[in-house]
Length: 332
Image 1 (cartoon, rainbow, N blue to C red):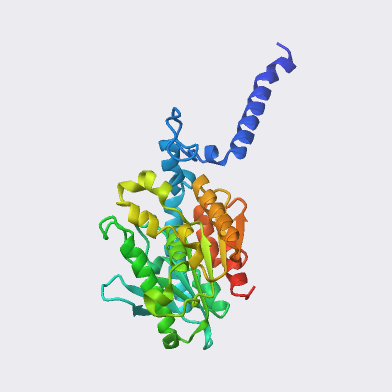
Image 2: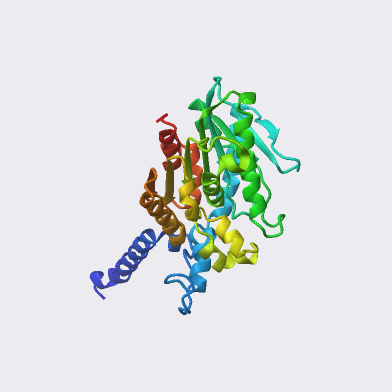
């Protein structure tokens, strides 16, 4: 056997390995051993747009497109603990009679400062104010009071989203009415949220504050809606109906895209290109409807960000949501 022939097997092996490595690098999900998107299946009947049930369920399940969900949630909690070590414990206030109806205020260092109320996500099922403290570093350092709401989870509410939406609205109203207690300026009053919190913040943005709370109709200065749901119809058709007891009244009342005439403040809507196809579409369709109504809106598409990276970016002044918040408040 020639020297050239003897070397051929190892040469082929190296080429094969290099080719495999290149393929894995080009497909991150495969490199990590993770399936991204709906699982392989035989195409079924269309349930929503061009999606069958398996595809629609995956499109409303963040774990299907961001498999490292558990790591992100743990990091939100640990980063929030680090933030509290830097800033100190928040001021805790009750906005209602039940134990969950409370909120954390990370006050600005100067009086009469802007206010940003944050509504956390968690599929309407989980999450707490203490685990979403990490953006406070950005907001407090920018001279803004950062407020995080606690509210009931949908399972504790018997599958009904309406108590959750009601508590979020009442929490926001409390912050506005009591802003003087922590040095807040109601003339610069902003609301934002991510994921299911983006949905709830969207509902707040189209609330009739004058009719329902005897507050100024235009009390909210601006909104930042990140990676949210603005039409509940497709969510109702998805596997989320296994823990949310959707009905026609809930779908109608809590779909902010159907109440754009009540939108009285400019909004920024954001999403990442690695999010589920439905969370991307929901954002684009909502912005298109707001534009068609002649209302001020900005759409921000963040290349290469997944759902949880979008949430984490609220704490980064150069990340899509951190920078969007600063621009919205004219602090960038």
